[in-house]
Image 1 (cartoon, helix red, strand yellow):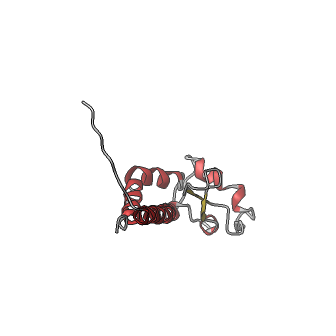
Image 2 (cartoon, rainbow, N blue to C red):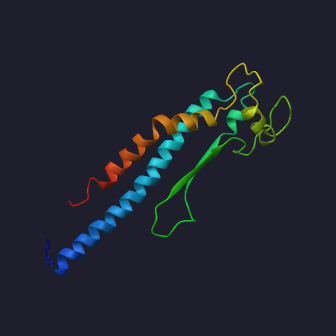
Image 3 (cartoon, rainbow, N blue to C red):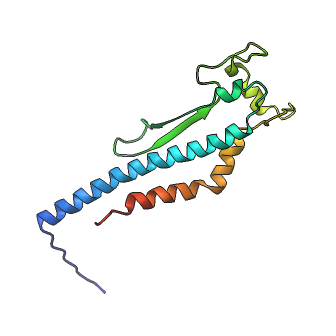
Length: 152
């Protein structure tokens, strides 16, 4: 069986369709950034609840940043975040007089250390938990919002 279809579009309709597509692509880019920001904020919120707080130096060094990736095509809206501890001026622990960046990894990784408040894996665990339970929800939320005006 063989079929044939012919579509005829006037230039105005094609230009309107192209404008709608370009608008939607920009909207998806903004949605991608918003989703990355929301995910990062939620992960860091959970992380600061779990970080050891003996002197609060580690907590005060928490930081995050969302930026557009530069290793992708210029038409791609790819965002990523960096988050961690040892930022915000890299505060000095008042007990040890060491900068947080010099011991943050040890505190995070050493499961044998006991902390009166907080625990090891204070960043890794929130990242893994978020990925398992919330990541899809946030992505779909912003994709739905970004595409809701398509065709209007």
